[in-house]
Image (cartoon, rainbow, N blue to C red):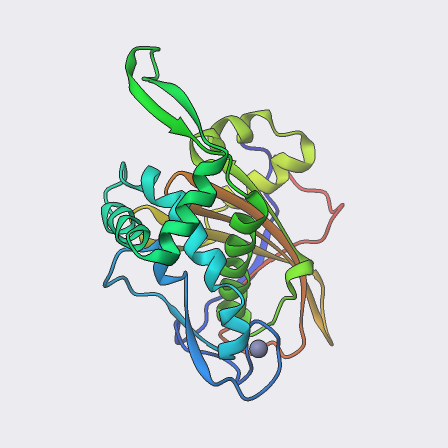
Length: 264
Ligand SMILES: [Zn+2]
């Protein structure tokens, strides 16, 4: 059941989606970016998918490459079950045949244990292996995507420590929503908000977010809530950001402030 939603005061979309807003690196906020980064990273999407193109320093971006490969290693096998996931799975398989990939695979399999695979109704379907992925690395990649999306939307650089990212299995999103307490319900209500901004990168990789204005001029302070779904993984993200230079066309869902009475 949906709780009462905040009343919309106004909203605007940027006129030219996909165009970098500022000539700064979206990861560190400093000037003179020397490359373009694609968001989400190519390691987690099939070939030929249109992605966001953001200015970055090669050095800043390279800090994530090992984690992005690790993300693909872990997401690749479950992605096979998704309509657009087989490219990701086969890319992992190919990478594991190279020496560096083989080393990564050995590391991942170090903590693996054999398990029986069962269908939803409990039917035995075979044997598999269960691994315990390094969630800090997984969440780091998801958080980078989140920061890229916020930059694309608002031109604002968010430091990684200012974005909170939690992961739930995509299949558990519904139960997470049902079990949410009052604070959590507000999060889900916002996500269900029809003006939430939604980007489908591919049939199985999508990002939905809502910006709530906390205070107005001269500096716009916002809370951004986001759900990023990547195949079997869902990431819930939140950040408070300041947009120093709001411009017309900026994506924004403005809602009335906390505590204002509203009808259900
Ligand atoms: Zn940088």
